[in-house]
Length: 265
Ligand code: SIN
Ligand code: MN
Image 1: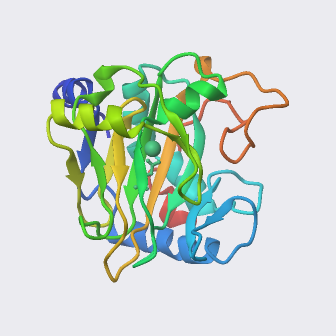
Image 2: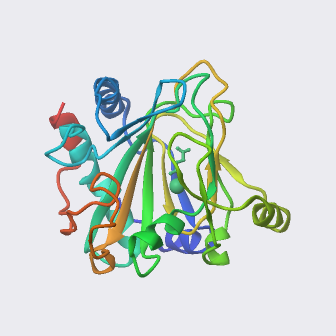
């Protein structure tokens, strides 16, 4: 899949694009079996809610490590994912910064506070906001189930100084309350990105996004494939975050088989 000039202009204007039905029911079934399998693994890559359910499964795209998965490895290399990411970043030399499956379990899956991804990635040493994330929904997603909200055009606000939010099971850099209220009052309304399983979203690393508690009876399974330009890879040292959140494999990803997920089943 190649983005049209109109889609690229929309990405530049809004900071995100939605692709309904990009992956088929059969492909999603393969990925869902993998999420069920990976959820049973006990390792540092699997982060749990305070109440015990799985919140996030990191690093599913490599051939090594506890959470390796052939179908997810294939997914990140499909032209449907990689081509738009390359276009958004303006280079063919892109790699996966990290993958995370946010499982947001029914009833217990908790909030992701308002944030910009680059608020964390800048601190990892990425010099430029030449980064983007490709989200694949593996369950039907609605507002009550904790859909992702995005503020259109908010990537143009530039980087907003974050604070280290320790209120959720996965601590990270979020936008302070007072600043976020100002932004919400002066911006277009946030868009709830809902859709059927197989829908995808590409978003800029400075776009403001968040999601709420899952109040529904169904888990909300999403994978976030975060990508960086090879030229923007950070330097690694003793204080770098672990490999499962800041990939040490910074080699450019090749385009592989668009049927790779089905073949890896
Ligand atoms: C994220 O922003 O990284 C995840 C948001 C979500 O899972 O809703
Ligand atoms: Mn994010």
